[in-house]
Length: 231
Image (tube, rainbow, N blue to C red; front, top):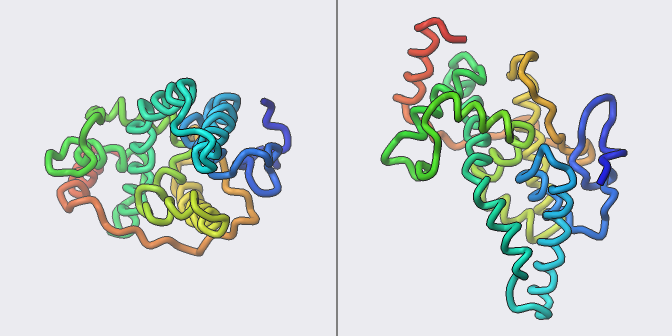
């Protein structure tokens, strides 16, 4: 499916709200489709259509479980999810660097997440790559939707609310828009970043308070990178 109408002055907008050309598909499923397949618009819409239809059928009692095709699609998304979540962790690490008065950069965030990902006590440790190269690859693949993954990780209850009501969906997108704004302000202009932006009608709060997740040792790891000549 073409993404005509999603572009304005070179910016790409998540196809919900006034940008939606597929109103028959639930907006939360459109969001999930793009979160999982940010570089493949057709797959994002196929995900939304199939999973949305199946979910509606199960909720109405017409189906007892997902179809075999829907299960294949969900399994494929699950196989991508750790890498996708990693992009959100990187975005949150950038925000934490700012909160702790460290110099903010994508490279320093990746450096701290390398340490975070290898922490044996961390809740989010299984299935993660541990090299900076593979962590950067995750951001290359999912960085354009990292603000949505960051919002989901930092505010899980808000994310659940986005599935349950239009109000919850609007609130989740508003927080995502705030994180998107932070990334726009702090990513190096040379970074390959063309995000799926939150449509402007979903007003963002001026700032988002992120609960600290990085131990001091992870921040020190970023400082050590800076002292060794890193950006």
